[in-house]
Length: 81
Image (cartoon, rainbow, N blue to C red; front, side, top):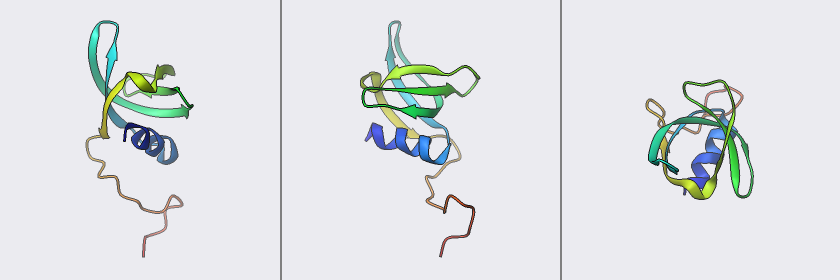
């Protein structure tokens, strides 16, 4: 399920909220995925401009970011039928 949220963020260029394990313990925050590989992904933190890399296995949970209901409106901006 985590991978679906990462793919959503990458395809829609939208932030998602993640909870992950770090060397110091559990962390959470909003991220926007810019590259998704088999075992890791690159992301932009909500409050940063420098891309970072994280292993997919380190992500414990994922959800839509605040204010995003995961609507599937067309990517080109047209209204859905």
